[in-house]
Length: 145
Ligand SMILES: [Zn+2]
Image (cartoon, rainbow, N blue to C red; front, top):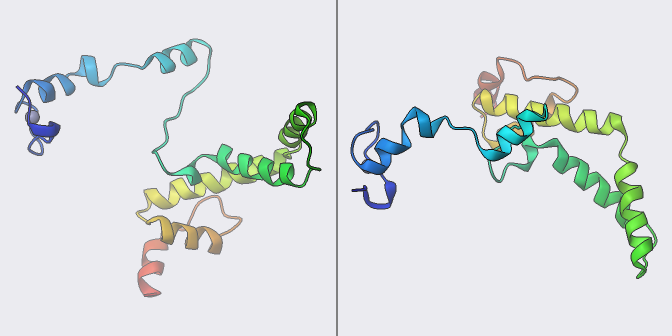
């Protein structure tokens, strides 16, 4: 038995077999294959929410690479294109990567403090250069309304 569309009553864990199994620690806390393979190699896996590219600094690196790539001379030679891609990938300065990482961290901080996407973008622009936003950021937002 299963609740229709797996839309179970809130806070229930015994409404249907699927929910019951879903909430069992043996199933709920099981590590994915990706996680176990990476962990065995000493790599930490961080899962980010879908459709939030601002949280993943690699997206900003890709953007930087694309910008560099577009400035390269056009060519129809596969060898030229491959060289242009590799040159662009290698041309992202480490300082820029660090800046992108800090920026993504500021978005994480903003969301943790309860800001929505638009408010976070505003706050991050205002507090450029800060690693985290001030604790008073929500009050500041409410006063500016
Ligand atoms: Zn259910």
